[in-house]
Image (cartoon, rainbow, N blue to C red; front, side, top):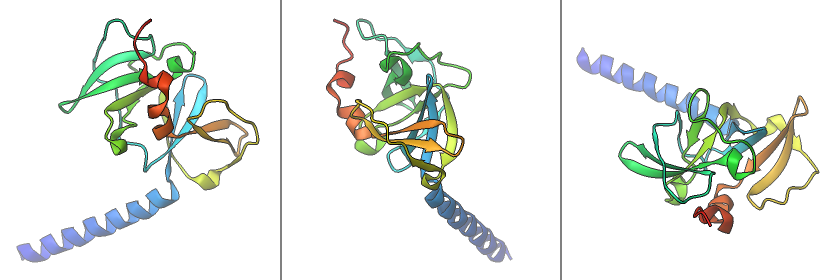
Length: 169
């Protein structure tokens, strides 16, 4: 009898995971807000998104380098994405979140963002012909309501010389 219920539970879990995987394929982008800008990141590039833990300040760094966060025993360098783009600093609390953006690349970097906007589908957007000079902006898009969105290329951001030089001069 125990085997039957275990098999049934296993089948139910498997069916649930398959349904979630199909949904993830349709909703392959994670939306978030950084300051006044709406951003998207491909789920394959995005790591985890979580409430910010206490941050340990690092002296003599740029104002956008917010410090170090301990996430389950691993230290992550935290960059305030809005502040990095010249906007007001993001408070580390309330709706703000840490996006572990470098996990897939083996880089322990987290982006402090203003809020998470949930999972999105590429079908929900159309191309915006405007340009952007930031090399880590993969695409400019518009949603059905006409709001602009920027698609983040995490690999380019994490390799940008300005991003890598957090020291205060």
